[in-house]
Image (cartoon, rainbow, N blue to C red; front, side):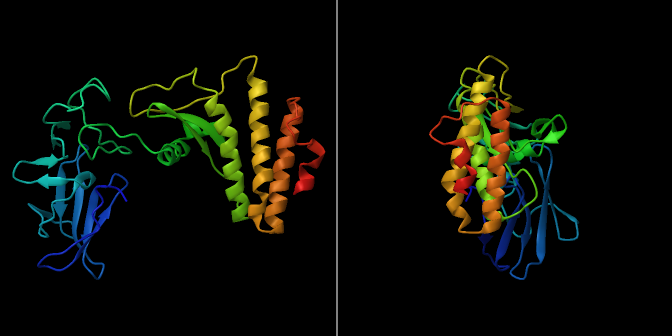
Length: 283
């Protein structure tokens, strides 16, 4: 679990259970019966508002809870958050002291990293999103996920200063095993493109999120052929994960046929150790 993700606390009033949002900010406390005892809301930069279950504002926590914005401890007397390396002022939206690690993660010594999808539990760096979080944010943005108005099944994105390969199911759920294999093999396709892109470095600012389209050029077709080949090889290697499920096998066979058609359309060289006529035969 995340370093600042409280689950339960005890006290004179009994056990209290923490509930959070995607930023790990505490949004409510409940008792052992699931009844809300206290709610929390925050300004854009983390100033807390505490209310009872009905929404009546409280001047302080009746449950003596210190863990609020991004799961960090709030000092009511100072009006500051303790972020280990330094204190954070949610009114100013900045740290109160210089960044101990200097210019490693940016040009500002006081900038905070508490964005909707980023956290900074140590107080001295901007933490990058995981690959999964990067892809989830990209799929949620139609401007990134769609090409010519249609959603993509796979793509390479630039997220927080590095390239990330993303993949998801391309159609309706036919069979869970088949979908899982399809996503895994689409990801293998996109990794080919991701590994070919060091000559186009990501923007180093954090946070950032954009799509890394394959640049046009003489070797575009060759790279796409290689990516399709990797995808087909993956499908062949993992078809056993269908566990004999005929619907799953048919789904992957059709997927392989669709890729073969695309490869033929690009005049791809299929001499990769896999004979084209045998692709579907292996399924």
